Length: 344
Image (tube, rainbow, N blue to C red; front, side, top):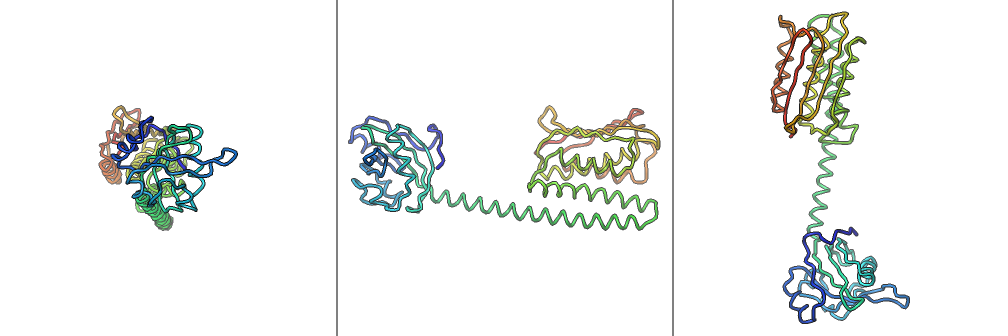
């Protein structure tokens, strides 16, 4: 049984202190089922049954009970669950109006009920709707959603495993090659595949199928990049505002962070120059999101590298997917790449 606030919209509360004729007139206009009952107690005053005194035509339609006037609930439905008698007894004897939803296996129906005590003492009015079909549809929808989530989780798991296999193959190919441009290219591809694999690994670990926590996800990417650079004098600071992001945003966002941080770690600092790369993600003043990757290195090299075009194109492509456009500012004190995009 699920109590609700008596002010919930939906069922109409019947005015109290009406004459029997006024009650007949009033309940005849209701679209909901309606009845007036009196509680029946044992010698110790405990509710054991209740009697139907008055009802409208919708009562029979919504309950399937015909000729109930003057008869008790257990006479009409011998296997009626005792929770109905307990609830109505509390309403009639203790004066506690209540709105609730309750099923009855004995009647094969599910009801949305508002019940209130009326005079004389021991009587109560019930206004209700048969929501059996609505409940069945909701249950089927929830079951279908649970099945879809299960299938999506399985798909995420398989994608994660497939990406892990691809990543391992790329790593093997990289190690088999001599040091040079070919090996470096494979390492860059490996890092990009790993960025996506990390997302699916995080989804699988959290039990979520469609969203991920920004701090966990991006921290995992930056920690992996810091470990791969092999330099203790270069630090990565992740200042990530924790929030849930849909995978539609998380995938390109993670790839952008991977590209920008990798670029800073590899090219912003000289062989013996320490430094810091700071990754910031927070809300902007418009309600959207703002990503910033900042380093305190020596700034962009005016002479483009052989691989710089691919990375920049990837960043701009992923930024377009997010609905933003990266802004680059660079000078002797370092480089800042910022990106604003909507959180939708």
